[in-house]
Image (cartoon, rainbow, N blue to C red; front, side):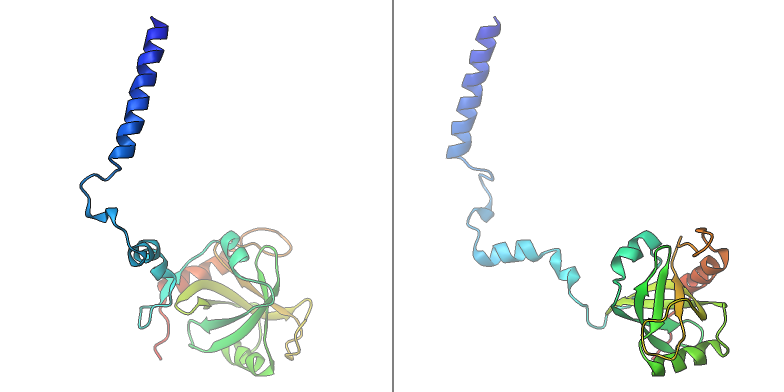
Length: 193
């Protein structure tokens, strides 16, 4: 009985294979003659969203630190936009494990930083980090330079840039003050140009 079932199953599968070879799916479709242009259009359907959208509304995102750590490259320059003043500062990520350590890229941007903070301090300020042409990430910047200074910018140390769930140097804990500033950025809007 089992042998008979195996033979029937084999015959069934063999006949289905022949049938599928003679009548490929889809049988009655108009897409059986696909051109090279059709192939390009099909493959490009979802990739167009990777292109920079001209005149598109900017996106403001709140991104977890673990993701930002991999997105924000060390040695790359980024633009910070202060939520309250609208002042834009160019910074470079120089390191950081629990959060990003950044420095202003030059002396002019250090002057802009001093304009934002007045007196450089540990105050947490809500800022937006421009991640690409149209995407801003909510962050919190403390404006007191400390630790190692790598760039020639008259800053005298690095600054701490925190994101959602990032942690402090010494305690390795999430800082409520930074998270509060990030929440403020989440509710904020980009300054109008």
